[in-house]
Image (cartoon, rainbow, N blue to C red):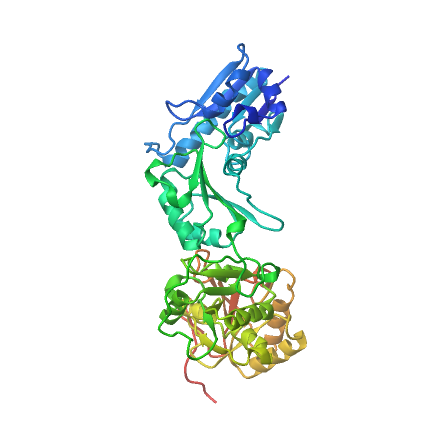
Length: 515
């Protein structure tokens, strides 16, 4: 019979933090395997050394490369993949011979552990059991005696290898955080903490639970002395309530920044409270207007649907408030309350905020007399219809209409009546929100309404994720439109009777119309 593979977590460093089960399995193992850096002692083996039977076969799985360079044709990823294949082959030979293999894993086997790659390759063929271990961050919080998260706080575990802007954004959007994989990444991590306003209270812990353990405030750490076996604890307690006194609810993803920027040239001190409503464009930063960029650099708070808030770079002094997709008026009231509290706030939308965006929701919420003194300033953005039209050529070069197929805020009967009138008037039509997971039939019904007045050969442009890495553009006809392929990421442009296609497939609509 084949042997069994055990992935055994040995904890963060102190042998006394091994579980009883881990100790029992190591003591009974036929084969004890462990990963190690080239020419270095395996920390996992050091932890378990006193438990390894004298008769056990030891398999040292030495990485060909860690942070250095490699001449492997596949680069670092190729070298490591080949290494895992060779390691799996070595362990498989023992398992096939009926020997049980204990693969030691520092911390927990499934938490940034190399065991996972052996599990991927061997578990389909051999019986496998995983023994959890105390992860390093649990030891670190104990070492620093730092409460990490309380009650409904959200904990995020982040690798320090993330791009600095992304790391800053995620730190700003969580309560408690653990940042691992420091080493030479520490300077960038420190800058990300500063940008997120999370340096105060953040604790650096080195070699947690080992004899050489130590901890310091992040601000006191020498960047040149940071080893791999270190991490940063960012307690949820270091994040404070927003100025309106609320924490939680639909706008719970908030954080308090460490300091506010200098008063902008357009300060509202003399004119009263202001809420800016900004369009971020469809995707790329180059489509964000200078006006919007300037306002973003001056406000203290950003409010919006999470994917749009995530597009705003985190910086010192900025507080982020992200929420879900169907709480527009609640989001608007939240921003208005911030303005009443004396805060400088901007509400962000994708595309143009005035085209099926947050601008109308803010004005709707501001009908409440409590917000009568607030000045609402809307800054335009590149709309999705403009972006798709530009990619397609010039399909909206003549009169055109814009309709949303979402019937969440208006009945389908109204949408159908408007579609019929637009088609009868022979206008180019831009269709927003054509489909979603819960709305799958509207595109087909809209197509049938349009075909009452339009030739099936009428050009149709389908733009998906225009401006993003996944961008695609399809030019088809109304008669051949594949309605099942349309989703929420699409915007449709349906031509008028005069809309034409060039030989290369570019769509354009003439400026002149014959009677």
